[in-house]
Length: 359
Image (cartoon, rainbow, N blue to C red; front, side, top):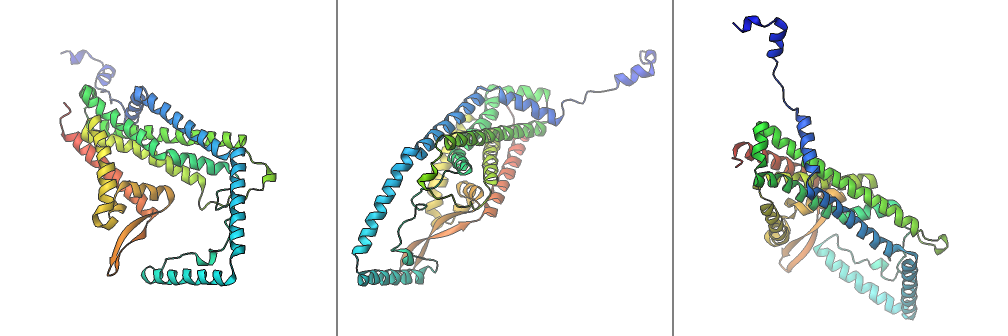
């Protein structure tokens, strides 16, 4: 009876159901919740403090007085080495060179890539080898950012983990699922928010590094009369290197959220980090498999991604004994490993979040 009293327009409006918050809107809500956490402010302050301390250290290293002292030390060392070379007879030089080459040949019988640098054994050190170069702003920026990359990544990891784990501990997760019952959407939104938080930390760290580099290179600009050599061209783009640093820090925030969804305890997350660092990276990597397990752990692959390749030492045993030999972990292996690690971890975390009770 009541339905017949409704007009067609009123009936159409009554049949409209709210669609709820979109996924993008849900991510925005999680980002705002992340921003208003006190730990977020503490992390930002820690980033500023670290970059400030690192900038001051670089300022002390490249100030004019320090460079002048290093120049004096370099000239004194070159003069002493030249005096020693002048005192040596040609026969002594020839004997030392022959001995060096015999040792190099013996080493190359075991490792074809071994080199003792015999042809350079009587060469005087160059200013470049002594670390005396003109200060290049982009290289100082990159150096500052690399100094803090693991610290930035740990802060992002801790922030992402506590962002998730604290909601389980306080019961806020259960309340939130009352309003947003689709767990996969909620979990994915939280992971993306943590990724965004890590991205912001990385951008802040790199931006502050650039500002600090601009400051110290302006204040400590060397006089042209000093005659410092120019910095040789870098092997890759500095911009690309800085972007890789930002990506690693962003993945740190994402990884923290993944572990937070799995463990649901900030204390458990911290314990896992300590255990992984000591047991996996410190003990297992070097003891088991003669060092060949290192390419399957995090640290070496992060280095490979940041540096476009990294080296590690494996133990090679032959009939005459065991020696350490360098091996290469490629850039491709590094980024594929990190991407796979992140995707598999996210899938496990979302599956766990979907099935486990939140109380």
